[in-house]
Length: 129
Ligand code: MN
Image 1: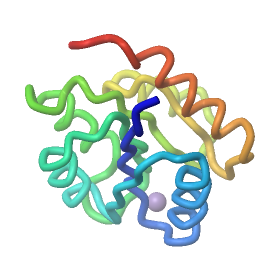
Image 2: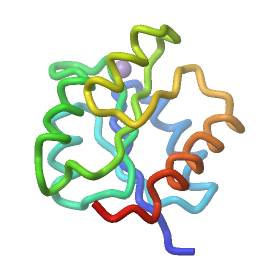
Image 3: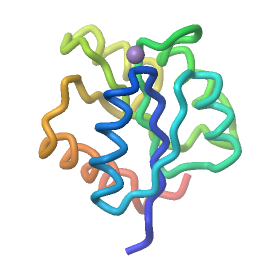
């Protein structure tokens, strides 16, 4: 199986370390950004297979960043999954309206987090936009 690259945009360093550790242990290649602007730049440069986007970020928030990514023809097809501390229905709707394919709420449970990631690849894996 070909190695998938996941961009993680997360300003909380503990969360970042946790997510990176889980993903790398499961053979994903991981790119990191601590704010939305850096995340968009890295997405344009490296075109990851999936983006995990924290919503609460310093400066530009994750929903705005997702809208910009979705509006960019070069990277708009990359699935974006929102990461948010709020397990609220409204957040899920906002995430979808911003163009996210889904939503993972923090704090993560390792097993369900990984299952979610695999699920997004199954949904999007062979679809060439
Ligand atoms: Mn945050």
